[in-house]
Image (cartoon, rainbow, N blue to C red; front, side, top):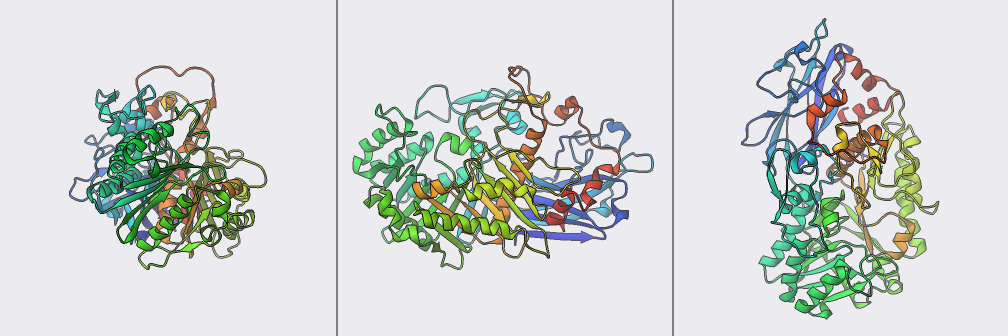
Length: 607
């Protein structure tokens, strides 16, 4: 079940299960229940751990005018309630360190109120509503889903790893020890690259390394790999060890980004190292028409393929530790054997585009057959122009369908790396224009959107933000947030249609959702029709859009160098910027204005 809910009188709380995170949504159904509303206090009780209050980056301008618990920090939502009707709780962000407890969590939410003098009153436990929900790495049946954290551009990253943290050592060494010291944060805590990678790679990294370690430990297993970027040192070490044991084959992209005549690209260096151990016949360099763009591990034993990992995540330092990405693992032989057959076709045909386009794998979608696998359809490219247009046209039709429901507001939430290009990219055009449609709740992010549409006031138009604010300067002290340089922040390629509706679906995988790519690249595009899986991706979109809506909204272009100074984080940062909680209930009005997107938002998630 995607969500659990509980109501007491006019107050309700709904909790949605994400991937090691929870979306909490609140509703107050009467005018009396929201009169003098100060916000919401959220207490979290993990399994076997002491309860704690979630932290708020905003506080009242004069805390002493309001009920304050001196045993709690100023940032505690007991002292500084959230003035929002939904919140995403992410484990291992502010509490429990890098290894949080997983299991059944209890969330207790309490609406807070001002008295007649505008002073917030103490929390009244009789008003509280508690819900219990599983908080863990996400899996359903034989499918597991994981995400990179993707928040280098955040105060949370600065708080954990400091202002000058490197993502990799300086220099061009392909293989470096991730156990070596990486830096020291403002609190004087030392950390290694491995510490950073655990936090940044998060559950996507867990899925990748769990699979590699499973194969390494079981000598009856072998691995076939499609790789595009390949330079993550701990992945490479594992592949070299498997290569020495003759238990891995690799199709590795050799387009200009990854290969040159000098052989000095990281992938060229890896090829030389791998061929010495496994033999040149265990690796093939190719790129179909343009790129070999899949990111796939296929695990097999003597009876055939049994498990497959896919998604948008490249097996690289940037892919895992800078980009926002996703990974899917199907522990199902039928799905795995289809990917294995695609690998064999590509391997035997030397990644020939014409031969693959003519194959059954490029012309007919695979549909999952096992009851324990969420309903999934998969297409493999490169395709002919006609088939590529048909596949992407179907996705556009599903997007447009969300605006045609008379009974309920439709919804489309997405994170797609690229939305540029010309008019020949129907998905890009549909997503770029979606925020204009007031009949659809649209919430999207891209590194390259055609224009920005920030969260509006007094309008029901949607939100479209960028994950790359560019050469921007946030107001002090938020100007300490790092950028991503020339690389990508948003590397996802997923679209969720119909969240909280009768037929939700998420489109995801490695495909860039462009006609050119579908005709020229080796890729896989999945359509998963399942409420729980769609919810997990929807929460990922919410978290990214909310974060970058803030960065985009407050950024101003500046070419000046950022000052070198100690990191200011959390509540103190907001105080320095002059941002405070409202001391009356006016903040809540937009959530009940039928012509405002905030009201649509509240009804969609909490209603």
